[in-house]
Length: 310
Length: 152
Image (cartoon, rainbow over all chains, first blue to last red; front, side):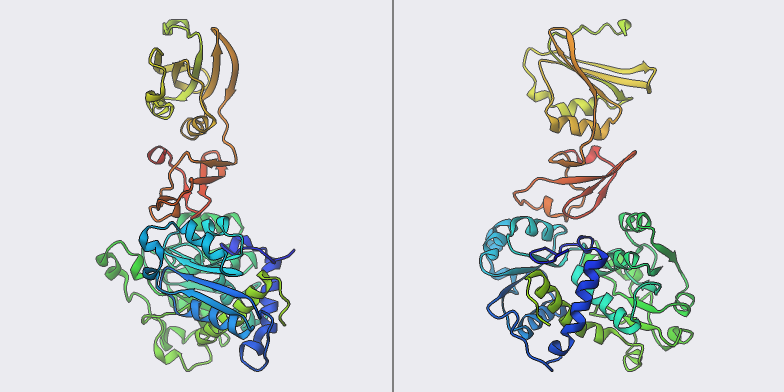
């Protein structure tokens, strides 16, 4: 088993053992990611960040990861400034970029764009999300956050709350949770459940999944409450969005009956799904989750580039 | 089948055991424009079949189907058999069979899929299930179980 030279397009590309290796490496990266130790492991290496859709956390955490390991990055932050605006195909753009750097991180509005990029690039391609499709590096960050809090993933009871239809992080996460034998509880506004194929795929994996329409009830037994925002930008029309906007909110009342060890996670940005009163409590894991993006992406970069960093 | 009164063909292809009502779709896949101008096409609709109850049959003179067309027929008419006729004799007869991967036959029904964005690439699907057939787009991972509206 080696991750060197591989692409990360879908979480399905990784076995359970490979995910465990990435999480182990990420734990070893912690002191470097916190600036307590220096590393030059990726000195002389260049990463291309090709972002054709806006991103804050994913892009900055990849940048930070590269810099913490002594590497450098080049970036397309504004697709309007590239020749795709002149009609260049993504295939050509990626072929060109693969000559400029050692690996490519791609976020693109079309589903399947990162699979195409991986096919035409002779350097590793890492998906940073494509359309409503998968977002595998976020899933690794989510798993690292749960593992840090509980020391294991197996047997955890995880409530996935919110927009399970368009929220790309939950599709990848549900697959990974099933792989590790966690129990999944789905809770969502009407019409925003998991797409049929995602649900079928999970059933085929033998995942333990249940549905809960009562958030209070679901939270009572849970170890993790994973909250997502409603993906306004993916709704076909504003009226449909308004029907479900604001239909759930996690606050002190919702969390009142929860187990002491329950943590609240969110891939961020949030838009009111979690009340600010939760922020100061030990349950709030979402800022730690955002931080863990750095060591996890450091682990990913060093493993795909075949460098022993920590 | 003598009562059908369809003239035997000297050279060409007979597609038999097509599901009832699907002959015109099969004809669409074959592509009438590509036919030899002197060729005859015979359609038999709603014919009794011991195997599948009712069936359609399509006979095309002077044409043998490309693997891509056979794959498309396999998607919409999985019970079909294809016989190659040369000099009035059946030279080869086989059931249509889906390969594990199918390229260029279907357009991905996901409008946001990269295969629908003018990139220089063919659509490609993996067979997830065979009875009934379910395919998954190799690029965007969308599953498809309805094929007629999406034939390329």
